[in-house]
Length: 50
Image 1 (cartoon, rainbow, N blue to C red):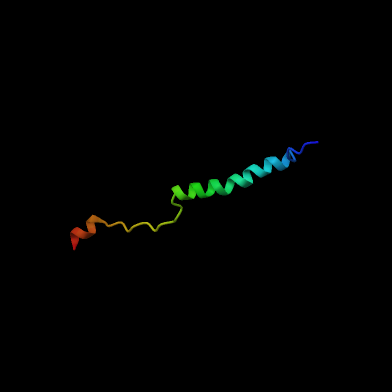
Image 2 (cartoon, rainbow, N blue to C red; image 1 turned 30 degrees about the vertical axis):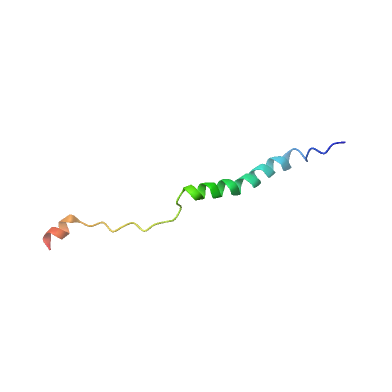
């Protein structure tokens, strides 16, 4: 009798559970998810009248 794993559903659930944190941190390292405030837009017409 050999034990090659539970097979079926547990094996299908195990792979994403182990890969998801690794994938998340790899993507987070390369992509900036921080929400930044938009910079104020300067209207050139207002500067000319002053």
